[in-house]
Length: 585
Image 1 (tube, rainbow, N blue to C red):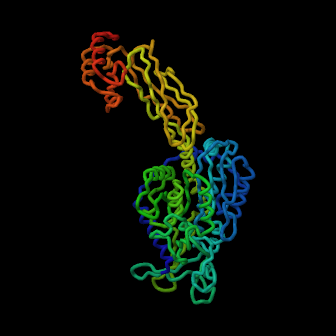
Image 2: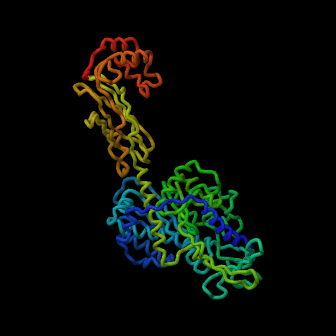
């Protein structure tokens, strides 16, 4: 059995085995997705969604979107392929809104035989661009995020897979049989039935590969040993490219040949350069062969330092699309993968969505001798029937909207984290210091206002506070309690939303109360009695440097003269006030 076909057969077995033990997500439907049939859909130039688009159709569609929706679409080349074709990226954002926005990346079609992955990326581009201003969700996504989509990375693969539906790699010419000729003996449809089949033989223990269907094109006595290309693009990235893993071969004959060096291929170089030119917060790459969401690491079974966050993201996508999720290496270990590089080198949370697999697609016909069979069905294994394309891509549509929405929410977020008053039991007439801590959980520098209230009455507002991303600041307020009614007050702080902030619930914090009372009432019951004297005596000797000064014991409440220490003076004051009360006995 050749390594090429052994890899294919073993990977199919691994996929089935691994997924049988994966944790399944739960299906939910978003309101936007349920109402999807109401969206505007045009059918020129991409035509219908019941055929697989060739690369010319994809390019025509992208250029049409660029010309038709020029305020929200920008199409540009990120590089050129082995066959000197442009690799296009489409950028979707409202270009009239020029504030800083988070960036997200989506990539389709690393592997030539996985055509459905390009259909998904193309479908999203068409739907969102043509429904901007019509659909509220899509409008918001493009207003507050920059979305980059490489619809198809392996652009030469469209023609290559049309001639050989087994084609996985790019078209980097390679002398696989060592005869100094390149790509001269690919598989052929020997019997003219529309399929290129491989012949397998059962030896009583396992299946052995015999040969590909075809003819000896180069007359060297070998059948179909020198395919078109190439290099497995998803083993060619520069993070742990040379790791010892199950897939990521150094043999050009193998389907998972990783190339002569990291980023040896113009396609991976193009994607690398795009990623280096941007600060992508999140990214998804689409593949097929199975349905599962995968996250780093792929080269090792060890979890990443952000494993908990990766699991959170993967599980939430899994619920939306009703698919399992797991760490990539649980499927099989692989070196030089795209998502490992995005995370390991660019600190981007990159995940892979395997969006389709049909394990019943394989068909077997008797071979020329006993215990041999012709195997076919590789295209149907990786891709749905054309009439089912749209149902598959609609299923995975929420993966886009979820990740973009998450980037928007996280990139612009101000949070009130703490309200710290000088004390929580206060003599009426005192001017009380209240500190408020604000954290920026976003990525940019913000200017905003903070207001503190007591029972909804404004105490003070600080304006034009400047705070850098991933930082915090503390602002001080003074509450003058003169002439206020005695009793309990709820202290709240509110930070004005920053531009593009969508999660505003945490801009308000109201978890602190203050009891306004008479001098000496350190127990907050409205009277000065033996309890107050005992509490003050027990706190004797504490200072503002003592543990528990402001919480949880709140010794500061016994500092009745506000000199940051509890001494005989405080005890005397409480004793002198003994018997006073402002509440009914």
